[in-house]
Length: 329
Image 1 (cartoon, rainbow, N blue to C red):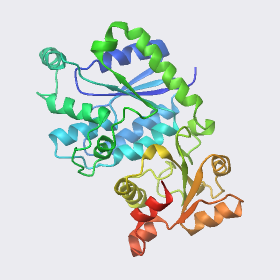
Image 2 (image 1 turned 120 degrees about the vertical axis):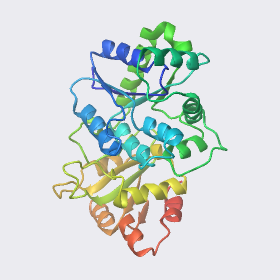
Image 3 (image 1 turned 180 degrees about the vertical axis):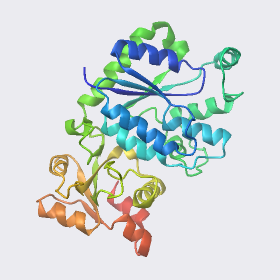
Image 4 (image 1 turned 90 degrees about the vertical axis):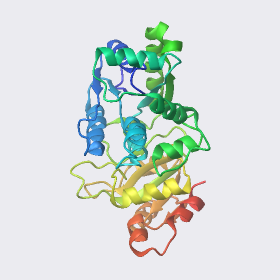
């Protein structure tokens, strides 16, 4: 069986752990539970988790990831220090063919949570606001206030219910046939891998991100950040030009699932071999003159040339938000 990555998220007391155990049993996989242990280094903590999963030789079930940070920080901490973390994380989750299972509350959730608090330690006393926000994240809410968090964008644009790598779990609906539901999730994860550009699934093929299924554009940057400490994923930093570009995409209202990502050059300076293959299916948007020159030199058609985000951020001669809107429909 192919290595699969399944991400479970939702409020406390909705059956995530029970579902995770069933998935791990059927997959003979590893269970990875993320808490709030590294509260000042959440982005690095979550990066280490997905990197671990990408390198694993067996399937991995991750219990809580970036959605938990986004939701719980919105409810209890007046927002996260990494508000667009989820958008960056999605690029890598999709690269690896990972799937999300949102475990949503049912009508008995509050009573179940109270019982849980009597039998184990829980950090919070009330899950009602958390439950509301998770439901909004799944179903969407156009009147939801945008405070600059990735989940705000997802909620206002219709929620995650229609995204091709997301699935819903509700203990009242699915708990009585948990084994069959777990089988469905495993089949779902297998399909997502089958639909992906095969090299992207490999952990050592760094220079490609996003998922081919549903994507329309290939964003091509110039080169990997030389300070990335062997983490060569394209446009994956919650700082510098990666963050600035992500902020512009957020403001422009461009869906992450429409995009795949790469740099023109690998960390060893060689031209990225994936671009030619992906350009057969996607429209190429280059960022920066070096990327445009390299792509053109290899006979690959460019849909739109845009300046590099670091240039725009420094000199402010171009409105990158408007440029992205015109380049990416």
